[in-house]
Length: 306
Image (cartoon, rainbow, N blue to C red):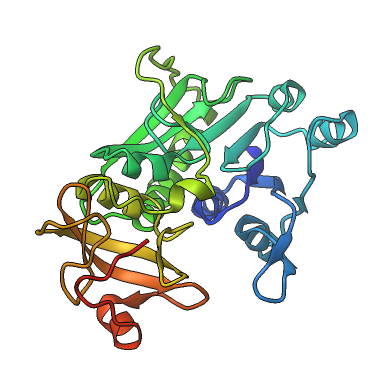
């Protein structure tokens, strides 16, 4: 037996789960995704990764800017889905949308709830120095990520993980978890567990202001900060008026004024300790290993990073 599903998602993170549901034999009646937006140097409108993938599979894609008006809600209900599956969609679902599917609406979320409810759970977990995270399938309610949990899968956060590496691992983990959970829902075997009332944290969107590196912070904190913002939007510093992103780093040994280069190979003093910058990206250029970057842009010992 397969389910008739409406899938609602937008970024790369949602593509493996959609692919897994198709492979499991479920009928994808329609895909909802964020509208195409200008991207690239030409600023041409580009569909989301989920939109592009669904269209390539011959699945109808809808891109409303809002689901709050009755015509959009009626069009959704007319699909007569057994369930709605939401993975990083980007729009709030009003109650008529949540109530339309026969079995309800289910969300695949990239954290272990109630920790890191909200928009940026993967980034915030690394930035906070969490050692474990995971994915969960949750029944959706009107509150922000407050619904009961049906299934969980955990993974450790390694000391060399960035948001990029953890994102890919969680997407694959979530794809399998979602397919397995829907099979249990089909057969009436799924069990729902209310979220704990303690330990609630919120993963607010990353702001442009917090991406700038504050060298007065400890090396340990900045290590979490840099890896949590890599590859996007990228933690950055100012070098002679040019913005340079740091995409990877490791803890180093040394002392100096915050932001001071302690050698000629981007060992930078922090408020406590030092960081070795191992991969950087000059504004408007591609990522480079530190050695390649320094051949064109030397940063001698004693230089100060802004």
